[in-house]
Image 1 (tube, rainbow, N blue to C red):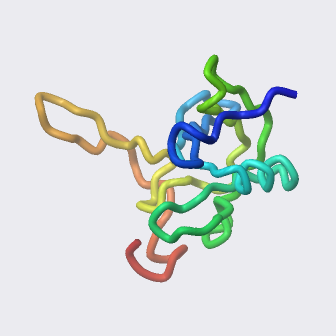
Image 2 (tube, rainbow, N blue to C red):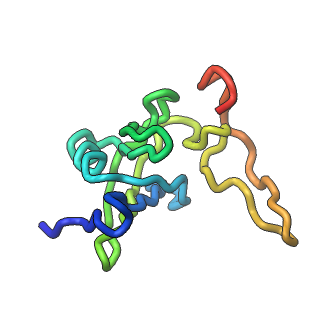
Length: 127
């Protein structure tokens, strides 16, 4: 098996998460090699948090787990697309199905989606 290239971004690679059913991009996170191996081992998407400097499995706080269906790598082996079954009403900590809930319209960001859950109820306060 060809190894991924974790060297270009100081040990990290971008991981684009896409819903297996709708094909919508849900979020983008970063994986280091440990998060990558944990994802492969568990079948649940695990990221490396740059701000907290630690691993985190998506859904560990919210219960909105991302179950891996398929993983693809780009031609340079430095970015992956992880196709998932999203368990829960959304992945965005602001209460939306996707982190990409805004659209640029005439130079202004407009919220185009409806919240799918109350983030205060899930996280116990604003994130």
